[in-house]
Structures are given as structure tokens and as C-alpha cells.
Amino acid sequence: MTKGWFVEQLYYSVEQVADLLGLHVKTVRGYIRDGRLSATRIGKQYRIRREDLEEFGGGPVGPAEPEGPPSVEVSTVVRLEGVDRELADRVTTLVTVAAAGPPEGRARLHVQAVHDPGGRSLRLVILGDAAGTAALLDLVGRLT
Image (cartoon, rainbow, N blue to C red; front, side, top):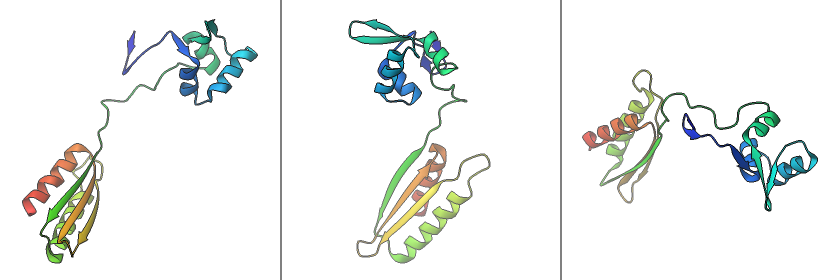
């Protein structure tokens, strides 16, 4: 059965239970040996029923339901060649100001700029949502 973004399982391995509960595999095996967590032995491996895991953990099993669509974060490195100090300062200032004042409801973008005067290049590192990053890339394209 499908629920949200993941498929519900009826049985879990010891490794899966350890991951879900944030425990070490040996700790989960110890809980099974002590009788604190019910499990069925199949061959050399244990399987834990969903119901037993929920009873042990005191709640539903599985990742939390996401609120809305998944978020997207983009990191981009832009290298501009043939950039002197004056142009580097102008581009850096305009891009930084544009990143600091995003349209209402959007997250702030992060920008780092590194100018190499000897190589006459400027590198911009942009981190943020896809739409904001695209808008900044468009601005950089228009400036250069």
C-alpha cells in the first residue's frame, strides 16, 4: 500500500529497524533477545512486523509525511573571464543586492564572489531555490 511518498512495509529487517529508530544494529538485536521487541526468525535473520515495531516505538513507522511538494536547492558556480577589478566590483554588488532582496515569499539566496586579478576572472557561487538562482543567472548574463 502506498501512503504519501513511501511504500508501507509489513515486515522490517533488523538493519531497517535500526535505521528507522536511529539505533545500532546490535542494540536492536539485543532488544529482540531480551524480548523487548517481538521478531520472527527466518533462517538466520530476524523480521519485525510493522505492528510490533509501532508498539515498541509508541507510534507509526515510516518517514514523516512531507508538507507539499519537495523543496529544491540549487548550487551553481559561474566563472566570468576577462573581468577587471571595476567590473568584478560592479557585478558582485549588483548580484549580492539582488540576492539579498528576493521577491516576497521566496527564500534568500546566498552568493559568494571571488575575483582573481591576475587571471582576470570572477567566480560567483550561488546557492538557493531554482527560480531565484535562474533569475540571478539571467541578471549575470545581462550584466556581462
